[in-house]
Length: 124
Image (cartoon, rainbow, N blue to C red; front, side, top):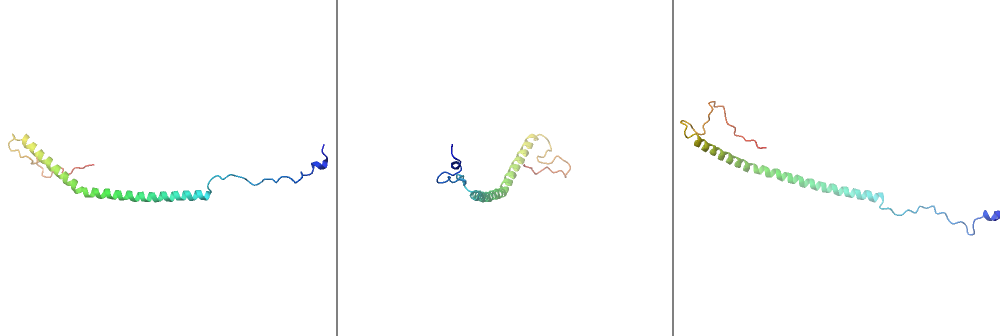
């Protein structure tokens, strides 16, 4: 058994120092670096979005103007087609009604002068 004095005394040279500092390994970039990276990505994204919107607007403008410039051509094509159909209908009428006395091809069969056949075609 040890003597009372031996147990109450520190070992020769003293006790080892207590390690109380945290020793954590490096776990990645700091919060400020992450915030800077996210901000940079967002700024680049908004830049690309703006450029895309400008290009989309330009393509829409070009499509609109091309349609505007095509309207006279399409109207002329429609007029030519309507004239061709009208002439073909008159020829068919002449052929069908050739044996009827007093029949005038193309003349209205209605006695009311207010009636006018439709000259407009609605295309959707």
